[in-house]
Picture (tube, one colour):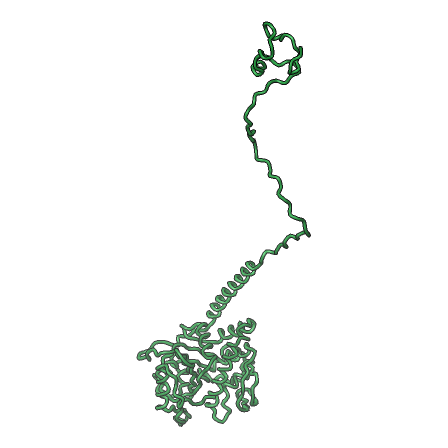
Length: 398
């Protein structure tokens, strides 16, 4: 007998008892579950819920997204060189530090080379402090340090003994306004403390800088704040260190005693020529012309010394400062930076004048210069109160 599922009919060898009809057969699930499957047939399977297998390790990479359309190849950006701004700033900063330290060191070194004297010494009844800043500038006939050949070159003449001044200038620097430079004639007939009336030049000869300062203070009513003195050789040396000074000579000057023969007109003067120019009295007004020439040359000298061509040129600036420091004699309280302030004050607009002159006289066989006492009092009273001198009192301006 053949069954519906294709198996052969007949008694079931696994069944006890007689054969039964299909309808009497047990449920397939139960039958298959109770007996092992016959050879050649698939085992019964029980349905199970699907479970996602557990992943061990990193998740698999995602599939690549849609590719962009290909085009011409894109060049990679060019690599810029690292900026050197920081390096240059460091170099510039280092250079500035070296310059500042070197400049400060140079100033201190040159300041130590200045010769100093106690010129502004206290004395009984000294003039009280007056407003503004007052300098007393003195050009002496000192030949210190000059060889006989240099004395001949500079036409200094023989050394007659003693100390004399060829130049006496009072410089008043106000708090506001123009600086005033006043020439004091060396033959001015004034009172010299302890010696009576004499030429003001005698004060320098009798008592040096201290007595000269006291004499000027008592004659003018102005208290001096600074003092500077220079000799023949130092003056000429400064001019040569600057490479000469251009000066417009107002008239021909032929003076063998001063060692010059200058023509009228603007020209560069060497050290010896400049010294002869400010010393010469071989002109119509003698000392009055000389004072005018001294003030004019002082202005030209300071203009050259403070010009950019000098200040930015170390080959000219350093020799000039070195020569100045080695040639000047200043008060104990003065320094190189005080001299720099003076030079700066004199480089701009400046009033130049002479003490009001009243005339000349012969005293004890010597020709002396007399001040106009009334005008001179008003003249110096204006400076003592830090005011500009009235224009009617200005004389001798070049």
